Image (cartoon, rainbow, N blue to C red; front, side, top):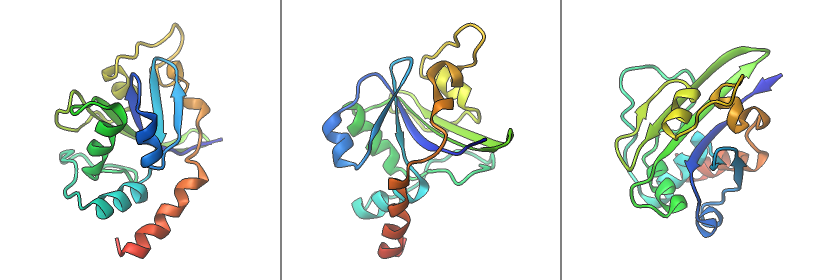
Length: 164
């Protein structure tokens, strides 16, 4: 069975009007977290459309996956959280039959976005403590969200239209 997602995860409440504005569907997770599916194409489109520049400085560690690193993610997180200095994580998985990889980065209170490599590490930064017999990933229910929804596919075409 596969697990392939790319997402922004926010702790606490989110602004529903901002989710609509950004064409995102909130997915509630346990632990007072909300997942918003995003892709590299989604963030590249919004970065170009809004004229935001730059990328996360995640250091020399190689990212094994196509991972959204556009600075527009911080703008998005601020609007969704209604906080000028948001705390958030960006996560990605690509597993099939137990083999694959994952990657995560976090920002705390608007601070620099930095790699934490594993999703469980990012969830700990967001305040998640594992339930007995589970890790953080399963505690919040991420295993139930196995793929990026099809509505994100259109952002590849939109990027092509913009020449991004």
